Image 1: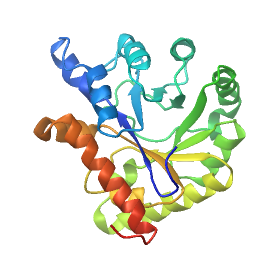
Image 2: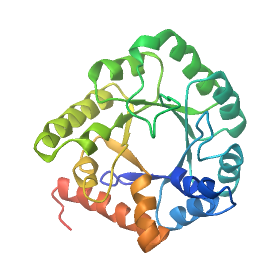
Image 3: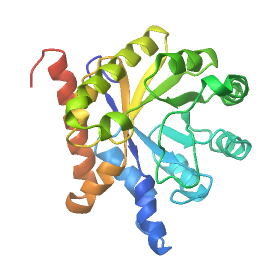
Image 4: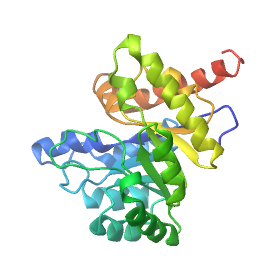
Length: 252
């Protein structure tokens, strides 16, 4: 486990698969990327098996789970099909996300409040398999309270609004995330965060002391095109933990 001042990095390899699927070939391989991420200091690997299989394929999930010595964060819609796959994969954790076929990427957090009964049962089925359950939610106190009530172990705070907000309004969204992290932590939930984080906007998020892990994908893959995957993972991990050290007044 990390020492108190370190923050974990979960590397999302979905967009390695996006490059591969663009040509329908066998490369680049998300399995290879996940293993390079491990060597570069990643603490976990994230894969999102979407219902339309637009990037990650079922075979990728099983190969990474079996061959990469990192905890797997399996992102999925809360459907019957995905529940059965999750039971077979047996990842370290499942992160339940909203999913619409036409969206380019996940557009916002899960509405836990409007489907509490369904999610209570669904979360219970996953936990019965020994899988930790994370809910991807907006940094909203009501959604966090609902996540706790349905039995989630973890909330992953959606940072997309923060990432996409103009600079003058970004501070207000950062404060919202900070407050949400405190609320979740006080409820006994593990607090992760992700979506839209890149090399210019991650430092402020990584400095939030209640956060355990940041899940980052697209920006790492984009940088890797220019610098290589190992360097891209290594660089953002250094950035994140530099921020955490600074926030504790330890300097660098």
